[in-house]
Image 1 (spheres, rainbow, N blue to C red):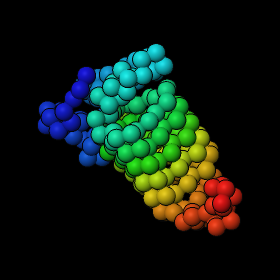
Image 2 (image 1 turned 135 degrees about the vertical axis):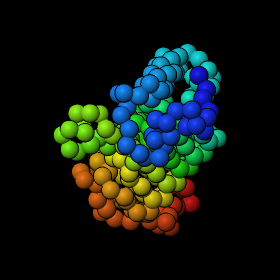
Image 3 (image 1 turned 45 degrees about the horizontal axis):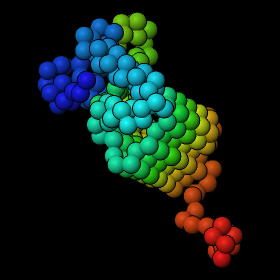
Length: 210
């Protein structure tokens, strides 16, 4: 089912809080669990029919994620809590087992390579015992730049920004911002090098057969 995000924000305070990164109680909300069930149900259908009816699966994906750009290519299974608020740039490839837990603004740039089993988390629960028992949480936006390569099993934690052209090694847990043009690995993820602009002439000659 297609929804108008701005209308949802006007009609439902919890949706407005979700996208403002304000504190909310998800489990006491009437609208948020309904939206996640709808999104998860659509994901389940996409995953079941993708190889039998790829055009319909892609249509459902674009209905679920209205801000997916031209040429976005994905492989099932995908699992999203919400499609609304998720922006995916042109020509980005998303490999199997892509998972987003939580909602709010999430931006993935153009020409990205998203490896298998990449996970993005936006919710932060209260640290203190009592409010955590009461179900208080707030989201923090995630932003991934253009031409970013995320290796398999990368975990992106709430509030992280990854700059353009950066490579995140397989299995990394990204707990803080990573600047553009970086090669970063580990848990917690840390920068170990810079991304070169181009192959050396020798490398290019070997690949292109010159």
